Image 1 (cartoon, rainbow, N blue to C red):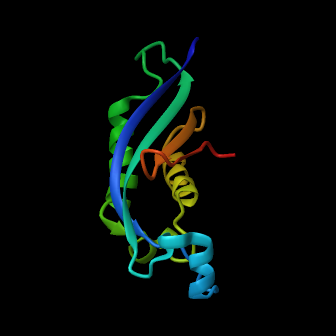
Image 2: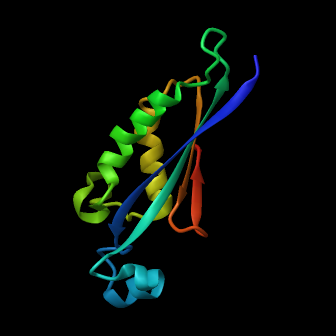
Length: 137
């Protein structure tokens, strides 16, 4: 049976600050620049969730996209949208909320809910020009 990848786009808006608590203000600014602003800054994140697998002979689906939509809404959008990631999201209390770390957190949340026989990949756009991908490696 052919293997196909299905994709679902979503978005969320969130604020964050890139910094290490154990570094000085100067060192944080040197490494993270204006992204270390103590008053935070925000992004309009664009998310693409990709699921790869064999087409089910009965349904014709790799995965029902309505189910994927609901998972993204409940696990990602409701958790991250319009939040200060550093302050309001438990996963980032001690984890720097870089695009890289956000993508891993998103992947892990969805991986728990999606059948293990399906491959999962996350593409997260922090800006139209800056994005990361993560597929569990």
